[in-house]
Image 1 (tube, rainbow over the protein chains, first blue to last red):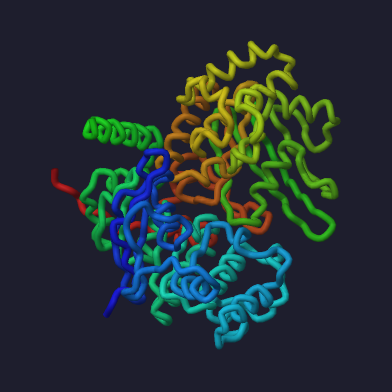
Image 2: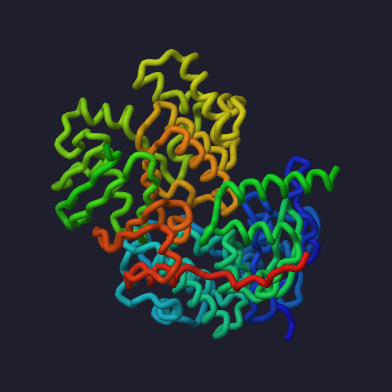
Length: 268
Length: 261
């Protein structure tokens, strides 16, 4: 089966600092790739290069075997939108606060001439039909995130890029959204690129994992294998940072400092 | 003296009741967690401790901060509590710091405006605290957008502690940080808390974090306290069905293989 997404050698620097260094990976149809790391590791930059919000300095992104173009004009732009859609941490940013859920979804369907109805779309993300006339502020955080996902899925994208999409949600709501995402990728074949700082969340929803540190992919492999037996000391450190029984923040802070020192020594 | 006593606190706004009979205590030098999902009333409880309930709210019950009655307090007592007894830190430091003012101005504001300290004395005090949280006093001349979230949260902690509060209310103070930065900030906070014998009411939606960081944990649901236990028992199959449900909803990492060096 061909890959829905192939990222090849994505590289980006800001002011001479490399925030993404030759990042490559592929997403199979219905597959899910996690990109994890701390803030500043470059994971969001990768997500934004994939979706075309940032122009990479080098490297290519192709969807269904075809490189993403730069053609101007409405038709090309809409076609690019149908290839990759993005969902962010704060759904307020992607929803118009004056539009009802129904109108927001209807807008997208009309613009892309999709043969779906608002009701079908709402049903596919588990939103009750009576919420159609609600505005974003009347919804809970989980419902708002479902609307954002519905809006992204309206165009039947090949790939959905989710940047910390469940990080602001309560655990029980988070669990339901993660289950929804797994169901959607199984049913529609959409490929997921799931960016998160939470390794346990990545474990729930991804098949393959990329661990990034300072713009570099330090580990790349099967999610369960990477989390069960990490090869790189950075992955190891991230795994032992999560609060649990016997967790001591002082110890994590020491590990973190020791790791940063060892990296500096290696670079010098 | 108990640092914080909340006794049968109920709070309602005209449309609905937000808190029902909430009772909790924080002893001197103790770190007490309040865990719950959005809408459980955990933040409302913390805000009520500083007398920051909505204008149209009706409050009944008792709140005492280091012996000061907050519920029936006159403005002067409330100001005393807010200025000297208790301080609060929030999830998003960028919303607390004025984006167009230098960090030093914001961080020294409490000492200068409320306590009447001179600008230089306030700067000296805040610089000393910044050193304790691992930041150089260079940051005082910077603007908020120039610092990372973890650095800003440490600035906010230093500013909150500059007036020597006995009680710190931390409302999701590390929830926006990634795990390693969270651990760094919490390590700093624990050090300062022990050194000053400060009491902390630690509000979080993260049950595991509360279990690992706090001494005792209260669990809230729909405006009421539904469970209260020693923090360490959170991880060993809690009795309370709601606490267990919360614990089970937390995504789990696969068990790691023991590595042979």
